[in-house]
Image (cartoon, rainbow, N blue to C red):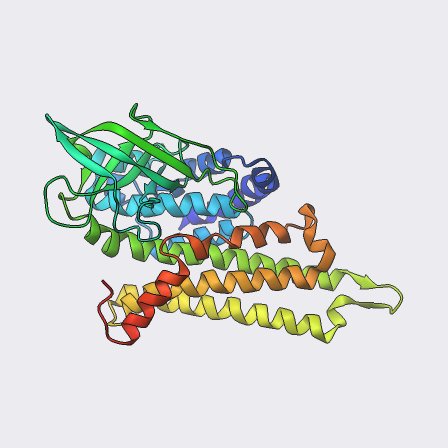
Length: 371
């Protein structure tokens, strides 16, 4: 796909040169997002009928992984946009779908709340009918691309129907929305992840994505598979970069008094071997997860649950190994290992967290219902 080939040029000319500044200053990677929009890559998952590329989840996985190798913040922004796009493609207006396909519209998810923590499927935000529209009230704890995105795929309790939630499309410039505080975090510092509060934010009936009360089904059947795969792809990209940078460091750094390189130390080689194994195991599981989804295999749900947890936990180990292998040099900003280390911390605590997923996986293994 020609547009996918354009990604490498964007990575090398736009994303990579800005990655250090994005991290140091906590800057949203606007230039990268704009470049991807112009190349049609924001519309990767949009259907050809609206001008999109009609790409697969495997294509999106490759894009996110490649971005994460140079900038985790950019990779996460694109991950959340693709997740939102998956919902909008099924339930959004043709006009909005065209806007996304053309690269003029960036969207994101607004699910997690402090009231239900990592149980993102159970919002406590409210939606009430008001004339011919609805009023949304509540606070989303962490929204990637907060303020920077054009819209939020927002969850609330149902208006009147039975069910756990209802999904809405809310414009980011809705006057009823505010950003209580900006993001200044440990890792993924440029993804603009911050709280967004709604105080009787008015939306029209056309803003509802799907039927009232059907939010849980949308989350589980549409969002979770895409999010799990792409979040894992981000973790994999971080691991690939960590292994590559750490290997290069030990190969180029010499022990002058011994006349040898660090790569000649068996202990360091063993650490790198362990890191390579962990990354390759995740890569294999990711490929199998995509295959399970494509073939509609009976173990698809299990794979979807496993891949995010496996990748998140592996990224913690691999980036820790990279720090250990590179020693004091890993603490220098210019080496970028410490940035990968910090960025990798996010996946394990992003809902559904690794702990929640492990519980779900255990239930699946024991033949128990997940909910």
